[in-house]
Length: 127
Image 1 (tube, rainbow, N blue to C red):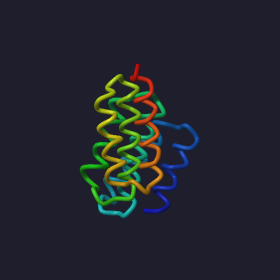
Image 2 (cartoon, rainbow, N blue to C red):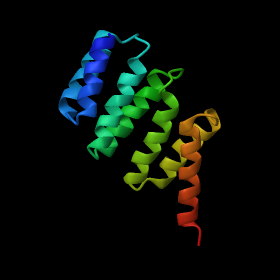
Image 3 (cartoon, rainbow, N blue to C red):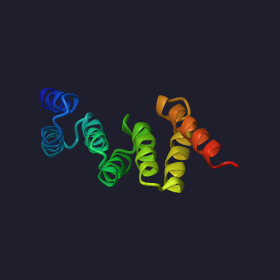
């Protein structure tokens, strides 16, 4: 499983989006209960995010949150889902996602970044 995951991640790092998606998807089909499954699903979201495919990214991040609620990728999924929603102009949804990251994972990097995003949006929308 590690080699398969690392190959897909290398494709992602090289900007080989379709290969990365195929690799992460194959990983999830082959090793659905792996401790890296949430990371593979998260990287599917990251691949879509890198391609500006915001709705696909949101769907992938939702999968991380719903399918792997105790996974280590969940805080980042909340944060990145917020960024994708913001890019789509769905500020309320973005704030909701960031609030979930701040509330559930306040001491994580994602929680801190989500707090910064909330502050940034608040400054932009305050007269």
